[in-house]
Image 1 (spheres, rainbow, N blue to C red):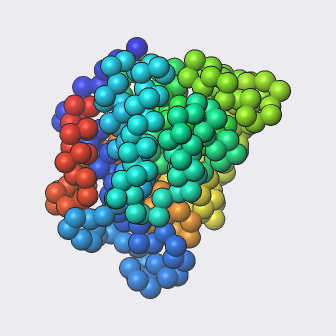
Image 2: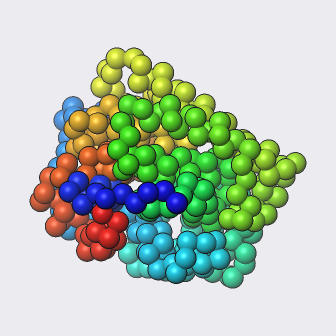
Length: 337
């Protein structure tokens, strides 16, 4: 087991979960706008103020909460205990009247199959590596569990809807990044550590968590199945390193690491925002929201990363009482702090 984090002064778990919701909310109205349109509406720095009371979020936060509650309710963090709870929470989300925030079709299709009671390995959308796989995985990174359990949980919650190996690997890396930042790793060191993990895990198939999912792909072996995902993630992380080594022109980060509609690009582009603005968390959110791609997911993950690094005090205090689902965010994050 990894050592427990004693973190109450910084409240990094709260910073991360609330940061995810804040980024989601800032990116919600900009998701389908061009950067030029965002600049005309919000100015050159993008949106930096939350609007509304409550401030509405999207399915990104809703599904992160579903994952978090499933983890909280699990009597043990094993595949047998967690899978039915994730299934139930995802199905509750799918039929909720609050699920009216343009949810991803991959999640809806997979939930329709899960509702029929079929095995999740058959219900999942095996060819999808959309960012829905990792937009919701932050709670896994906030648990005090060993790295193998973290990987299993991250990949299982992704696999219920997104069965592509890159969706699994990107979710693993996203949760791992949250864990490292919460444990105090310097943000600048993160890309190299994540690249190292892609090499370490390249042939590791977590069969106890994933079962026979690999067979859906037509791959020759479980090892070849997962290797594809780690390779795609590694390539985009190298693009991230190259982008960070160059002067920042303040432009759309999607030009460097992709628009974030797929899981590995959501990971890399949100990391770009978080690392470029590690000393200004609100600017990290605004940068993620000022993109031509999946702005809410990019900003949400950027908020999860920078919030895990800096803690709850990094965010404007007044935001915590206005964000939608504030009561659930507090109930979940407080024990993890």
